[in-house]
Length: 190
Image (cartoon, rainbow, N blue to C red; front, side):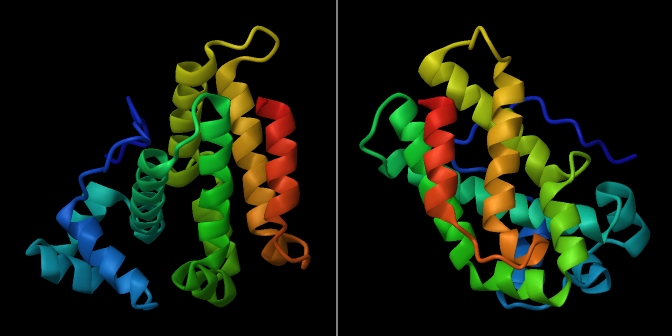
């Protein structure tokens, strides 16, 4: 059975990537549809094993998108000269800009917007859950527990806000607006 639980999400360090996910990542970056049969062959396992291990194609796609996101956050975190909440906000801003600029992600959003949004923004999915968990840890590390709002709720609100501004072209037809998203996040976290 596939578990969606994640104990710790450290957005400050490079993640280890499962070989199956690494192959799916190559397919994704080549702007190809992730093919479960090809993944099973490449991993030297049967399709049934692949499905037992990952659940379904959405889960594999989520792991791919998470691997990209996690690597980017770790790189941005290490490169940031800022400290405290300014660092968190700076990393969020740059990550949103990178997300909007990703050609492979843009292709996915144009080709299959329903799947893309489901995988990226669903609470049951890999990406959003891990982003909320990791961002909450960064906020706690930089600012401590917030009295008025539990940190996980604050992180959830920030992630949902970022999603709505990054994917606004798909959601509402309006172009992504990272400047506005960052300004609102700055007010929430600052």
